Length: 407
Image 1 (cartoon, rainbow, N blue to C red):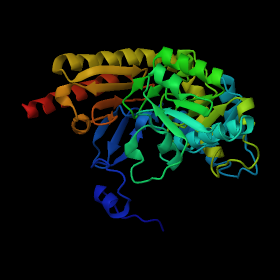
Image 2: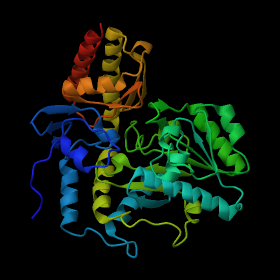
Image 3: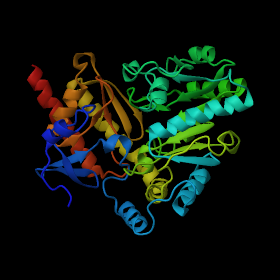
């Protein structure tokens, strides 16, 4: 018989590894862009599970797909393939630059696969000297030892050294530094079109164009980490489409499964050929449950109505945030693309992002942070405008109350 004793926030401290510091309340139900906690209190979700629940909570079409697949086939192994994985891969290649797909369980795993592929491709084509990966300061690419090494935030590597060698970091959006860093030892340059965890900072068009030019000229692969910016988040299926810069490898996860764990690495047939049988794998990658849900999510998100709606909601969200800024002098900048928005705090509010997040939660609004100085919002792509307005109103109340407490 399953354990049926009640659990509370204190249970976390009793039984869980202390690498997280979750909020005091525990959500137990979600529908659309709202969630309810154990006490029945309602919240408007402007966090989206960190850009994951792109179609809101418990979207009926996703529930239907998961239920149908759960009653059909859960798991095989990679000794066999399965229909949902093949269908999802086919649609991904039809809708993107890619010709080949590798499925994993998360963005970190997708990036791990991308970095391994880049090194193996270069090893086959040029030899072992061409193994360096160039990445950006302040970037984030996952939590495995390899991906925290490539990520440009030292705090995630602290205490885990020695880390893998052969990784260089350059300032984000600095074209001269990038040109100096990509050499005949570089196998790949990896970049987020929008740095998410690093503060919701978009790359400039000229920077990404320069990256493509340098990689093509010097025989390095260009990798776009679109784990956070992908799946309609910016108003196109993937952000690279808006920049008009095509990578050699793209990683995707988060909203790919809209809450069901799944990740994917997309690439060309030529590059993919380096991963011959036995060189990489995943027990659960491409399992039928994940792929069935993801296929439905992909079909829904790539529809014109959803993608066009992102631009409309972006305008509403940005206007609301700028109104809060004008009233309270809270933000230095409001930046981002589509429904991935970052609000950098003004000097007088520096270090207060978490306090603002908690104040918003107290007003029934869930938001995110991206470091101590940036408030981050990543709501559902189909959030009703009424919910978006109500969420902004709650955020304004939280700011007003917090400001009053400081004076």
